[in-house]
Image 1: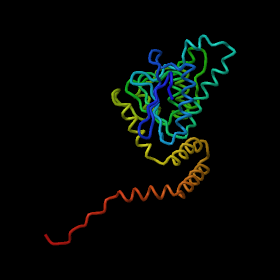
Image 2: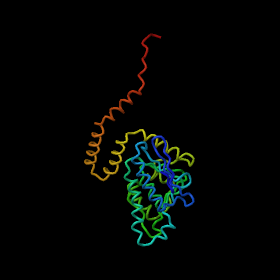
Image 3: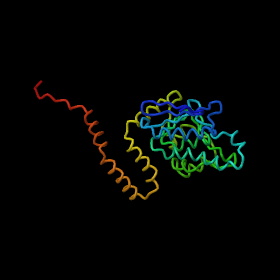
Image 4: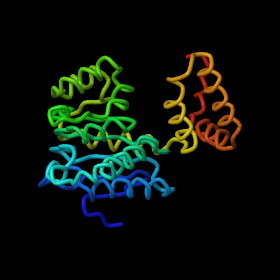
Length: 260
């Protein structure tokens, strides 16, 4: 499909989805909200695409929601506006396949929200994260961020609205890797290529576990993980993949017993 606000590039077994409103700092407009949902829905059922890399490009991720559009929004359309935001965020947050955010430059407000619903984050050294929503009189989305950095740190981020640089983001666990600006996309795509070689079914179950078990007591969590492991272990795919790994191992070299 062709999109007005996104560029989609399929590579091997993963896809790169790029926010494409550079003249508006990749602000998330009505069209982009709809297209984000559509592209993730389409790629989710594409068996050739096993991982998604979401980026805004080298210089900016997203400045957040389109302020001009929000400013002219009639009161009677506010509910629909918020539903359209929740629609694509929930789609990505509950996605069956791994989603990697590759963040260059700023990720503000709604752009920051996009980052927090992805599974893994590779940031450029130029990346800056910030939740300035309170300055405009409304609340930022708290839950996904709190699950990543903890409640106390998340409160600080959303209440103070101070910018967080890439290295600080790495320190608090907000991002997984920080790379030079010329390298962060390459690293994100290498990560996607690595993940694309993993079992699709196992990844789907692992993502479910990552969402469920942190909210369980420790014994119930261990039992749940054991049950899923037993389910996956009984599949033919496990046997085939183990056989493939074993076949790639080199036979040990024979040691000569002849005297020197």
